[in-house]
Length: 603
Image 1 (cartoon, rainbow, N blue to C red):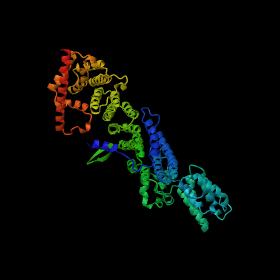
Image 2 (image 1 turned 135 degrees about the vertical axis):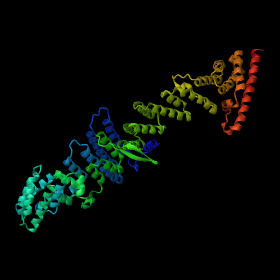
Image 3 (image 1 turned 90 degrees about the vertical axis):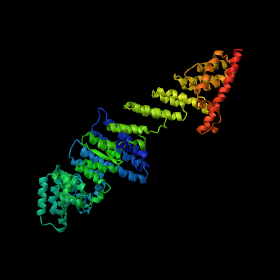
Image 4 (image 1 turned 180 degrees about the vertical axis):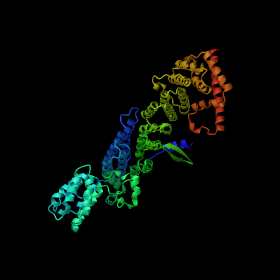
């Protein structure tokens, strides 16, 4: 029971507050599906890592689309959401889906990419082109330290080279050797850690600097300390614990894991953590720490596009294998992590964006649970769609071993068509789904529709399709009988009349209409050329109705004759009285005409 309820809950999945961006967001989902489908082919042309890269490219394209289409207020909010998704996804690429493990250079580039303002906080051109020399600019050391904490050694090297000529002739020339040493260190990668350590030691040992020069010396030490991977110094000049860890690990690989680093330096000691508050810090920390399941838990606050594709890739790399316990009513159900997020995400695609084919394809990658979700969606499908749209769904069923579900859709559609009196469409859907046992019931309903409305259905509009059911045959003869009588073609009408009267398959309640229509022929024997055998055969059917048929068998005839349906008795008892009268009136009227006809034929 809990499994069934879980499936129902899944199928109701929707994203909140999506009224403003359905159309644009759907573009991300469509393109992501193409990648997902390509990845899950039997012989996939791409690897998991390549798929991760393609998802990232698609996400970046979505950010560009957001900037093009959204009005200003929505733009800001939506863009921020996707920048967060991008930050998370790109970090996952580095940590989980990279061919190069522990790629600290890539990690540094990622951090700089998601924090672009840190690079541009200080005016680089103003520092480099300062009239009194770069060293005299107030932002020289903040810029130098910032470039160092961002791993931009190229910028640090360029700054030092730009500064060296001026120091030779300035009042700070006593620290020139240290600038030269640091410039040489920064210009040659990897960093010469031994030379760096020696230069720092020599600089600390020097006591002869003036106060101003001493300030420069202390800042030199800060830069060199960061380059050497000194954690205390890095913590002081970085933005948050993530920045500090990347910085230290980049310059000193022996720093260890993020978990160990965090234990040594609790977050409460980080000085400037609020500057990155717009980014999903908790998610990023969990990913860097390698805590996959905690990262997944943190990601539930974002568009489940992220969780669906992330858990799919992690599962394909065999990096997750747990199940998640989902409360359902008063019970719980255990679902594979990947399946849970894909099913909910896929239902959103179908429910809010109309991407049913993509949604069902996602679901079918989730085993039996996914198949059940697809069937549940189809069972609740709104069938007020055109023929082509429904045919697409049924074709999908045929291609994915869901033939019985497709047949049920056609049967339901046929039932709707029957309710709306669209008999031609009902026949089409029963025939297309090969539900031949239901086809004749359509013609039976046509007979009742005739009795209730007086409207005949032109079966010639059915084209060349062949039908051989009893009610089709009855309706065909009835229609031909009525048409010939209307055109005063009584001889031709008699032929149709004989076919009906001579048949043992015509039910009593329909035979009453046949005989009633045939009175026109019995009254004009000269034209219709009915024989005494025809009359006797008809009388035999009349006698059977008289002896065996209850009043209810004359309900169809009553409606057939009763043009004003508004005053039909509603209560069963009153209707029964009316039907008894209808039976007696039928027997009396037809009985008289049988006697007259027989007297005339056999005087």
